[in-house]
Length: 284
Ligand code: DCS
Image (tube, rainbow, N blue to C red; front, side, top):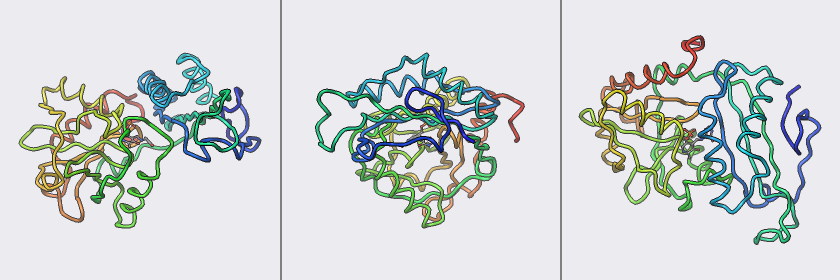
């Protein structure tokens, strides 16, 4: 049995019903977060919950909880479900109301749902690296919002999967933006490049951790985008996300990145990242 959080209570998954009029269902009118759990402990949860509130504010939604209450919900889900390594999924929709594009007036109660799931670290991908496929970034212009409206991301990921790749390398007007569910980094002559945190990407929490690690390690990092063509010329490429951590990219569209094996700078960042998480699970 899996315990979810729904309708202000902890409840079994099987007992949950969602209204057919939920605006998440009609419009993708909602926001979400994915928070990593290591060794039964939340990782960078404050940053994720803060971002959830920022997303809510950007789409003019009100979350009927405090940051502290959501943190408590996350901890309770970990305990009730016996989560060791995995993640919390948390989403809020604008609520349930007969279908009209404009917000319901008077406002209806937002629907808050959360669950916790065991999910091992993707150790093979982290060790060996992954292949990506370039896909044009056709998403809307507010990618900084972690919105449930993910059709552009879904289509990009599917295109990558159909080409036997695990992620899309999205590019807009010639510039590499991010992955369909990750941030992208390129390394050339020891300098790391990544798209600035504008409206065109999600400012990933793992991205921010990596920025901090670069500073600690004295690795030069430029929040500056690189072009789709330059991606092929990079010495190293890697992606980051809550679940993927720091994953090397070893090929783009079937063309090798560098020698086609994870590079030294990526390895250094991976080692530094591993030091941030409980040692008992590194190598699991
Ligand atoms: N860019 C996009 C479009 C994302 O969806 C994500 C996370 C990221 C970047 C990386 O952000 P974090 O470092 O904060 O995770 N996607 C989440 C998701 O949908 N599943 O796992 C992580």
